[in-house]
Length: 311
Image (cartoon, rainbow, N blue to C red; front, top):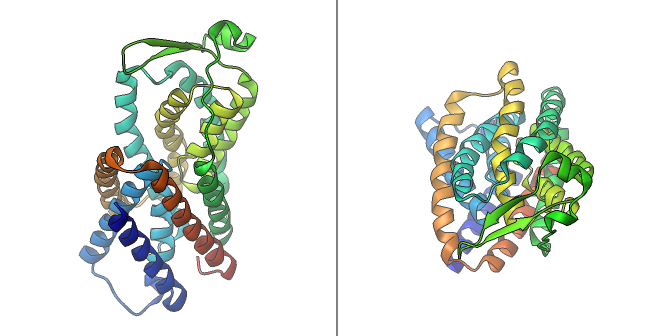
């Protein structure tokens, strides 16, 4: 794993340095054929899916810088492509968690009211906002996500009888199975606070084309005190629906290009599957630190390009 990590890090640093000194591919005199462009998209998406799977932050955090900074694709098209990739990856993994009985579907569908509304608002803002401003906001969000990924998560377990009144009225308390087959009963609290945070998560998803997993986990973990395993799987279940809501706006604006989306979807899916297999044998603590630093470098690069107007 150290060799793989070093190779990934060196490759991205080289790409970033290349961007500083020579500008994006779109601004150079190099003309790529459609086949070359598609191959670069596929390989970049594979790397995005691989890193997203290992870091738990999703492939959008890599896809958007890849398209907008390194390939010179308009930021709006990059966000639209990332949203389609989120739908594809979320659909595959979410179904597995639902079958295992970990996902709280009732909670997810309730919170989707907030995330869907937020996603539509975010998409409307994004499609009318200058790309340089989006790049700066995206970079700042990446920094927040990378720092939050290193934060020690406290796993809560509120007994159903200790849940808030609104939890009982909405029947949100549920159970999830342990590896031994034992069923764990849990409740939650502060539904209004969690619902409000989910609205913000949806808005960030529509605005930037990311899964907003960091915001959703904060809403369910920190605010609502939902067990970490449940909040993570339920968040994954919600990502696809949230992305669909905002992608409708991008489709109407013409910002989803099939020739870009197809190789990205295939690459991300394969990369995510490979990443999931590597994750089983990897040192997760070291991986989180490594990818948090990697994402921080990408964030600074996005902010810089947004400030100087390269995006």
